[in-house]
Image (cartoon, rainbow, N blue to C red; front, top):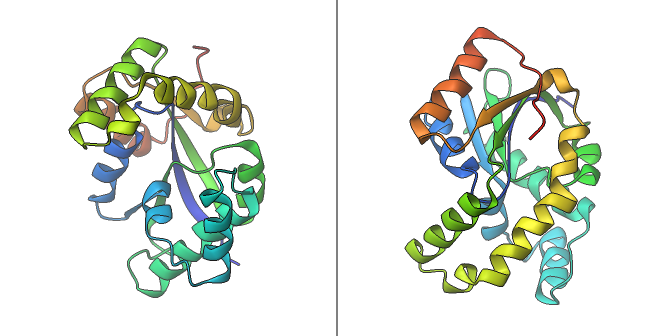
Length: 202
């Protein structure tokens, strides 16, 4: 099986992964895949879709194997539809892998060329962004302080360790507190120059 050339947008909830992913996806030869969109468009008639629904409807964590299989099915469908052309396009991932278990399973599917760590050390900034976004999108449950705190805590304990899984020379740290256009500029500059910057500790 062909491994897809991949860039990963990585960071805490509210760091701007979705914003940057959508913009990169409009540039020729980049294909953006947001994991949240994949899960929102699940076909619950399929075996893996039913399994996902079974766990999520009980409020349980969905096993990594099922999560990755759902993602794989979605990517396969975009290849078949010729929306993503893996021989010439670079896959831009946002929201997956969410933990080291998923990163390990995905090794056989993706060839990670760069990980862009959208760094935002200020928890207050992330909190404020998430609250504004939830109110703007009319997702009132997501505007709840406890929900936001839990999401940020989950990122720290489960997702952030993924940064230690990939070789440090693949990780480019970008200051996510900058305006979105400046963040995009730094990402594209790194892509075009092929410059690998060592990750800074934040």
